Image 1 (tube, helix red, strand yellow):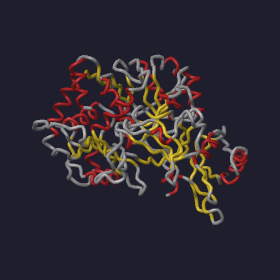
Image 2 (cartoon, rainbow, N blue to C red):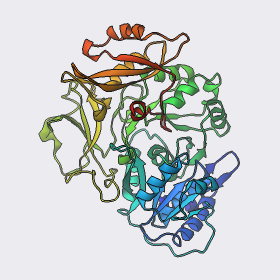
Image 3 (cartoon, rainbow, N blue to C red):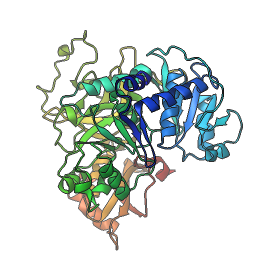
Image 4 (cartoon, helix red, strand yellow):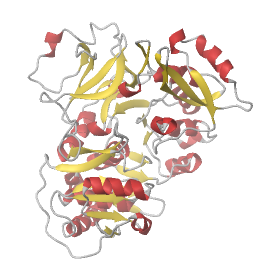
Length: 496
């Protein structure tokens, strides 16, 4: 990625690279600042050592992150909103040599080791090493099954591969003349590589927003004639309700949504409000992050996550290991036709776990690579999907959230879709709870959209018209649900 900064500085030195509320930085200026940062970082950490970055969406974050990559060190972007406990765990787990953060971050740290330095990185400078594509570039911490986050190890090659895969899409999703809204947190894989990485890869322009506000962000989009928005469902839902949305998004050519499922209803509301459709993407931190998109299938189809990117092979697999469906190939020498599975001969499939292979996959979890791709390069995502008759994929749920009722599979997402369609429901979250008779049963936490709220009995009658009896949930009304920074409901916090 760093070589792309230098290339943009050579090829279009005066083209805007980054725009904030107070500053515009050209590619030549950005390259100079990255070079200075990298030469200071080599004096703070040895080759391959980890540098924790605890900064918001800012020029300082971008300069530090790209400087770490140029210096041949490993970036560990972290949420500035982390508590002292959360910071202590991740910094310790990564064995970071240095922390780059503001004064507020330094105040949270319980020990002066590792040192916390400000983002200007003043100090002596050193020479830069050669950085190989296979070298580790970034540790991105993602939720672990144990409740503790795990560091996904992404190499320089994996980060670059995802952009090469996206480049193979026709017509292109993003190009060098685009102005891209960077409102997603840069410490998250989606904001970091799909957002910032795309800007760097194409030498285009990124408009940084640190805190999302629907009305203020629309003003920024209009002011800077943003052409590409990279967002999550909550952003598009909030924009849809703004009276100025159609005119404010007049310059937008491409609207991309990922990181969490976008409901067909929300997609329809956005299209009705703006006249624009949303390209849906699906991926994970471990895949740098994009795996599938409606940009390679039907860009107007709602409810689908599309098909695999060029260069990504994807299978739907049963618990017994049988392949239900396959699309794409990440290995030219392998003849997948022997499986006799293709879009053409698939009239729709049963749900199966998504298993993938491609050059964008991570190298396993820190520090020893545990949990990475198998010897043939395949990695099981833990997500469940089915392919429809057109060969387009639809997410069902996470394997870990599957509820077994008398041995029958119940997917929480199916129940949540029904509940969320009720006019009195703002959002819902369904989990499995123990049951003496059936082993487990679904239990729904529901946030009301009305006052007075619908009663649990009313919602159960509504569900009964659309769900089999064994899928019917018990219902509990709550004021709110806990969310991650990208809008996903934290189900573990509900039940803990």
